[in-house]
Image 1 (spheres, rainbow, N blue to C red):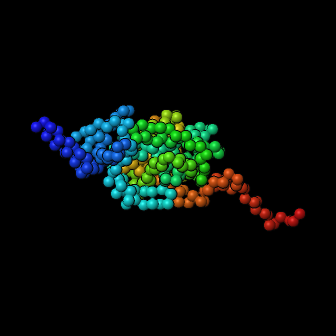
Image 2 (tube, rainbow, N blue to C red):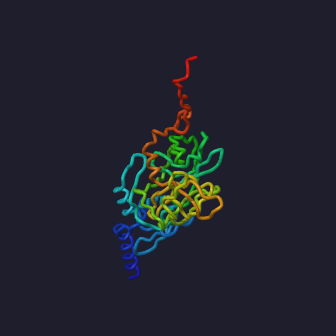
Image 3 (cartoon, rainbow, N blue to C red):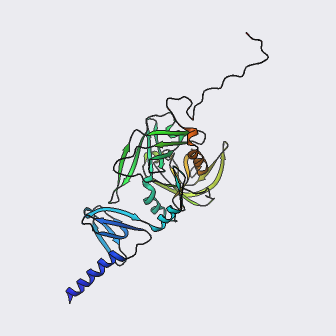
Length: 318
């Protein structure tokens, strides 16, 4: 009788693995033996992963996992309905907690390193195009980037990328576009740009970056005002904590889409951070050829030769 119960339990277990419907936020885990398990990952430890398969929670040794792929039908549908804008993509993503967004898009935020200092940036496509602030790379030609790649066990590993190319610069809106060489053994995690500038006062936002070199720091706040005028340029003012090193990083909304590019804070104030709205970012990206960078050309999007002086027609010829 006991053997019969064990056999029935085993059949129910494997049936659940095969036919139990996926949750709205599920992973597909492929074991080294070739079997697939679909369920929600509840906890990741150095030696094991706990997965909810709907009728039970099972424990999987990490050394038995071949690969792990997150499958989110709601997000996949939002991405399919999104708009491909050439080098970046917009999508109406589902609302989630900050923790869930950080887990999903945190890999898309990078640290920018130059001989003059540190900053942040974010990857906008699989080719490795990366947005940051102009002042982060101003006057620099040797730029390095650190990306944070999530392993199958959930831990992050640092990847140093060199030979980063500057594609375009716009000092007026404090924006820069870089190109990262693509590693052979991985794909870049990208972030989505908000479809419109609908961020309003009181909306929750959060930032990811490397303030003072403290990598992968997350700060949360709200939009204080969406149109703070400073020297003729409109900024998003936010209570999310911003510090040196956050410059160039993304400001996300509650759906995990970028609504601004962080670029400054008031030195003697707390909770007074500012970000460049996506309207300026989209204009820069869509017209990047006008701001193209060429280190061999003095007329390169941010530096122009002085125009010739106007001649005085009334002056007698010499």
